[in-house]
Amino acid sequence: MNILKGAETAKALTEKAASIADSLRRPPKLVIIRFGAEGSDVSYENGAKKRMAKCHIDCESRVYEPDTDPEEFFREFAALNADEDVDGILVLQPLPAGISASRLFSSMDPEKDMDGAAPENRLRLFEGRKCVYPCTPEAVIRMIEQAGIELKGKRAVVIGRSLVVGKPLAMMLLERHATVTVCHSRTENLTSVCREADILIAAVGRAEMIDGSYIKEGAAVFDVGINVTSDGRLVGDCLTSDLSKASFVTPVPGGVGSVTTSVLALHVAEAAAKKLADG
Image (cartoon, rainbow, N blue to C red; front, side, top):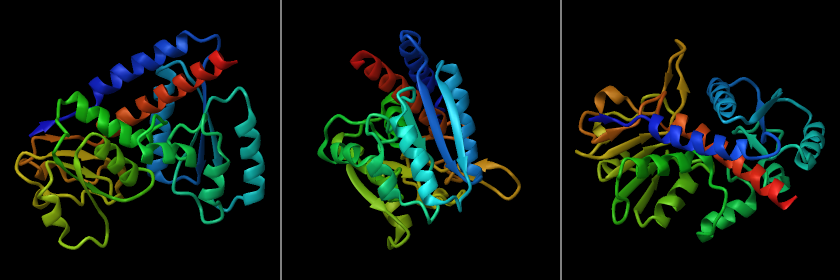
């Protein structure tokens, strides 16, 4: 089993983002919106801030309580959306019950949408057109490419069907000619389905759920999970120590997550470059 760390992929993306940022007349700016203090959200936000600093990108956090008045929030979001000094917006999900995801992402300027959540970007992804990809699925694809893993004709299994990771990643894998199965909580014989995968992507959000019984000999395993245990450990969806049959396994931390923040930085830098060129 080879541990496939994200450092090499992240370094290349970080250098590219920093180069773009340094070429502009002002630093790009990202605003991160977070509701509450969920451990995985805070962890991702902290990692994103560190990555933006390395890429010479300004980063501002706006933190709201889960019970924030929706109308007050949407007024502030509209002002942020219209702010010419803001190049990118990242909304951490899931959202609290009072904040409509449909309303939020439908109102977001697709040019400021850094995670492929706006309807226009989702439609472009579905149609196979150029778009802003969701950061985590793009990070998985870039790590697959960095490792030299062939996707064409291979069986890929994605565990998780969220709009943030599972569904967009399935579309991106299909674009690259993989045969894709998307699994979820109601999939029958889940372990058997997973054992058919040449490439297994775990995005289920359950700490260390995927053990050796899910893995085919020689499969490549990409762990998208970010889970904080009761004793404060940061772990993925995979029990890495039990995956000796795999050819590649990404660690948590230090795997897909480290590349995700680099993808985000590149999105922000490219959005700023496009805006300033148009302006």
